[in-house]
Amino acid sequence: MIIECLGTSGGVPTLYQSVSQHKDAQKRTGPGIFIHDLQLLIDTSEDIFQQLRQSKIYDIKYGIYSHWHPDHTMGMRIWETLNFDFIHKVPKSKTSTVYITTQEVEDFKAYFARWEYVQYLEALGVINLVIVDNDAEISFEDTTVEWIQLAEQFAFGFYLTTNTKRILIIPDEIKGFRPTDKLKNVDVAILPFGSNEVNPITNERIHPEGMLNALREVTFDECVTIAKTINANHTYFTHIEATESLTKAQIKQLEERLEEDGLKSTIAFDGLKIQI
Image (cartoon, rainbow, N blue to C red; front, side):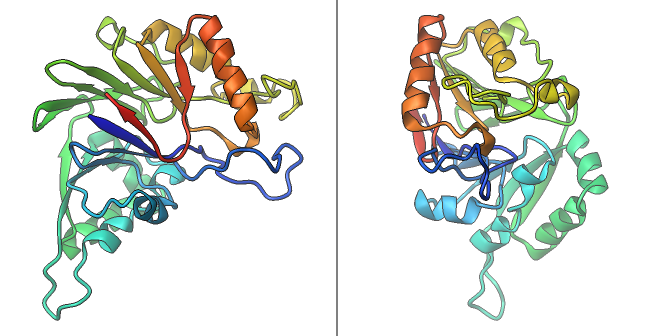
C-alpha cells in the first residue's frame, strides 16, 4: 500500500511577513492524504488541484472527510474539476463516491453552505454521495476503513486494516484522544503535529505564553504523548502550521530527538509517499 501526503500544512499553510516564518522554512500546502491502492482521497484543501497535478493523480474513486473545517474542505470543487465533462453537450462525466458521516452532515449544514455544495455536486453527477454512521466500517477491495469519532466529536480519524497491516490516520483535532487497545501497536500512524509556543530546537518564541492552552489548541508535546501511547512501528506527523517555521535541519534534529526518546517518527512533507 502507498499512502501519499499530498499536503502537510495545517490551518495556517503560509504566512506573510511573519517574524516566525524563516525564509528557509519548509513550504507546505493544505492538508490532504491519498491512498493510491484504493484511489481514496482524504480531505480537499484549497490546494488540492495543484497537489493532484503535482502527484499526477487524475482519477479518484472515493473521497472521505475528517471534518468540516475550511482547511480540509475549501477545495470541494475538485470533484467537479476532476470529473465533469466540459467538452460534450451531453456530459459524460466521471463519478467519485464521497462518504460523509451523519455528524458531518449536521456540520456541513451549519457551516459555509457545505451541504448545499455537496448537493450541487451530486446533482451535477460528479459524486455519488453516501451518508454513513459515525462509526461506519466499509471495505474497499481488500482494505477495511473504520471511522473513529474523536474526543472533538465533530472530527474523525480512520483505522485501516488489511490481511497483514494496520494503519491509523488522524488528520487533525487529536486533542483529548485516548486510543483504545485496538488502535495501539499499529504498523503506521499518521497524526497531527500540534503546535508549539516556542521553537522546539531554537527556543525562539512563536506565540505568547499560555495562548495554546487558552485556545484549547493541541500542543506538540500532547501529540507526542498520544503517539507514544499508540506505539506504532512508525509515526508520521503532519498538519504542521506555518507558524512552526521549521527548517529541514531543525526537522532532522527533532526527529533524532524523538527517536532518542523512544519514538521512531518522520515529520512529513508534501509529496511524501509512505510504502506499507
